[in-house]
Length: 477
Image (tube, helix red, strand yellow):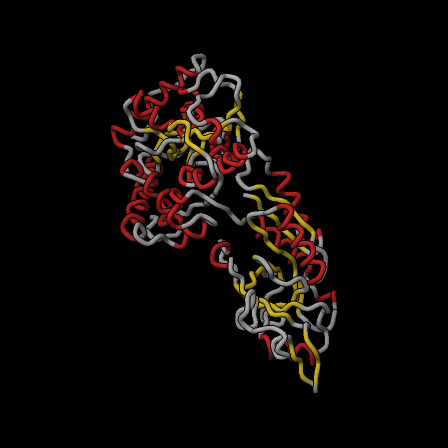
C-alpha cells in the first residue's frame, strides 16, 4: 500500500520522516510511506495535491499539520482529526455581514464535493484507527486575529480549529495555539509537532481480516482478559518472522515456514492459527503463460523468504532459484509489470487476481494436500519458552475464547475493528478471507493440526538437509 503524508511545511512531519527512515527498510514495510510538502495555503495545497494524486496514484493521503483552535477549553498540543471543513474566506463582506459562495448562490450547498455547505471527511470511519477526537474546521487564506472576524466565523461555521490548507483528504491536526492576537510566547508549537508525529507513527494499516477477527475480542476487552493487558504490534508476516528469529516479542503470529528457525526459543499455541484445506497460496502469471510451466531460469515473486508460501513453492519447483522476495501485496503488480515471470499470492489476493487479468498456473496448496495428505499449516501463534508455562496456557485459552466470541457475535455482521483495519478491501472479500482462513484449527490445533505442522518440519528438513530441525517440545502441553 502506498501512503503519502503531506503537510504545508517539512517541519511538521520531519520527526516522523526521520523515524520511519531509521526504523524501517523496504523489506520490512507492508506499506510504502513517503512524505510530501504541499506549500502554505489553499491554492498551493490544491495544485500540489492534484499533481501528487495524478502522478503517483497513492492509496492513501494523510494531510497533517499544526493549527490554532477557537476553543480555549482545548489543551494545546492535543491531536484531532477533521470530520468536516468549511471555506471561511471565499466570498464577500457586505453590509457588515460575511457571505460565502453558498449565500451568493455561486455554489449549491449539497453539490459534490459539498454536503450542507461542508466538505465531509469520507474516510473518517475507515482510517481513524486511534479514535482521535473528530472536530469541524474552517480553512482561511489569512490567519484570523481580529475579534470581530473570529466571532463571524464561529457564528457561521461553528469550527473548532482553523487551518490554511483545507481538508480535502484524511486530515490530522495538532493544536499549537488559541486563535486571536499572535502572542507566540503562549504557543506550544514544539509540543504540537511532537504529538502530531507520535500520532503519525502509531497509525496501523491493513492487518489481515482473519487475524483481526481472531483477536478482536481479546485486544478490545470484549471478553474477560483475566488481568492481562496486551501491547498490540501490527506488521506483515515476514517482518514478524524476522522479529521471531531475533526473539523480539513474547507472543507473535508467524508463518509456519519460519518455525524450524525459531523453535528453540518459542512454543506453538493451540489457538489462533491458520491451517486447512483449499487455503494454500496460488502461483499466478500473465495470460501469455497459460498452459505452460515455469522454467529454471524464470523469476518468481515470493511473499517473504521464511514463509510457508516459499516452502510450498520450493517443494513444487525445486529447480527454480531466481526468486524475488516481496511484500505480499506487491506480488500482483510485479507480475503485471513483467518485473517477474510469475508470482506466489496469498491472503486477499487469492480473491482478486482474476479481476486484474491474471491467471492461475498452480494451486500450491492443492499440490501439498495431494502429495502429503495433510492440511496446510500457514500461520500459527507462538510464545517464548522463557514465559511461565501457566501464563502461556492462560493466554492460549484467552485466544480460543476470543475466536469463539467472534464466531458467536461477529460472523454474520463483521465488527468495526475488522472493517477499520481492512481499509480498501470490500466486505465480501473480508468475509471470504475469514471463511477461508478461520476454522476449527483456529480454535484448537488438535492432533490433526499438530501432525500437519510436524510434516511441514520434515519437508523443511528435506529442502535444507544441513539444518537441524527439532520435532520434540514444539507444542504447548
